[in-house]
Amino acid sequence: MTAAGEDENVLKLLHTADWHLGRRFRSFPDDRKLTRARLDALDKILLLAEHYMVHAVLCAGDLFDEPCPAAEWWQEVATRFAARAWKDRPVFLLPGNHDPCLPDSVWAKDHRFRRLLPHWVHVVDREDFEFALPGNAVLHAVPCMSKSGANDPTESIPRREAGDERIRIGMVHGSTIDARDWQVHFPIAAEAAVLRGLDYLAIGDTHGFRFVPPDRKVPPMVYPGTPEQTAFDERDAGHVAVVLINRQRRATVEKVRVGHWTWEEHEIRDLRGLRELRDRADLPETVVRLRLDLRLPAPEYEEAVRLLDDLEGTSAKQGRVGVLDLDRLGLALDASTIDAYCTELSGVLQAAVHKLKAATLQPERRAVAERALVHLYRLSRKASGCA
Ligand SMILES: [Mn+2]
Image 1: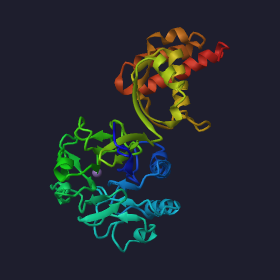
Image 2: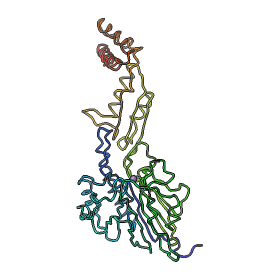
Image 3: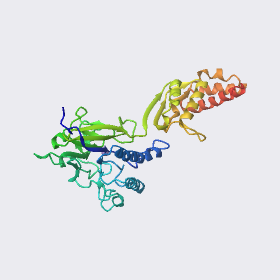
Image 4: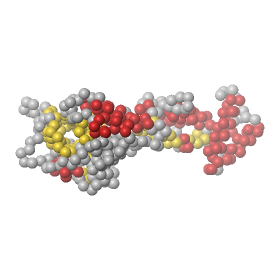
């Protein structure tokens, strides 16, 4: 039996990080969809905060991709905050290593961004930042003041004093010891939450949702990861953490999906794989890197080209994939059987087929020769009346 009210949550937080607003994705032909999606994620986060009726929103750094982002980014952020009629739900914005609190940065006290923010949005612009939260709780947050550093930011958080029964929340940005990324900036000790006497430590930097260390859930040290994935190698990106803390100061963490885009890499080695990919219903919300290792006889080659056009789109029609990084060079014509498909051509053109077939064996001429053979194949099909 638990005493009445023991399990009641007295503090609810939404913890997010690594928005990377303004980031470009130049390897994609239409990268603006991904760039804009980052602001849409902010809207979803704010709606989620209302849905869960959290007491505060913690934004643990790298909110902008650089310390001096273009005006369109900070103006939009300010507009989106100002659109919420929040009074008793403070938001805390922490500068990270991508967007450190430099004198000329967006976080500077005299920057227009600061003046556009509603009064309940607080920029953590000093190392001894402290803020009282409901439920007899306190937030200690430590910003990045430079792009790199060797100090553990949690060392700036005071340890729990004897007799201090408050819920203590920390927020920092940096790498933890077990981070896969070994170019470590602002290293954070895996035991920091225990050492500082924190009941929850909100961290930012790593883009996948993660507990640190993975097997310790109390007190939790959490990376929510980026709300909208930024690269193919990120695991478990696209979330925020909703944190519920009860009277006994015990925090439970719920991982909540907010990301719109799913990122996938595919290496296709047969036509069936390409057909299956084309027929998937979730492609509009998917970022696909597609590599091909296909050598096909003329009819299948033609089908593969049609499938790739469906996926990528043409001038006349929208592609099925939301954002596609496609390298068609991995699609090759198997020219060994081409004669059998070119029987309707005139003698002159059949001679051309033979010459081109030989040319496909020379690496530097292969691509051009294959394209020409495909044209001749189409001609032959037309002549046979089945085009
Ligand atoms: Mn970072």
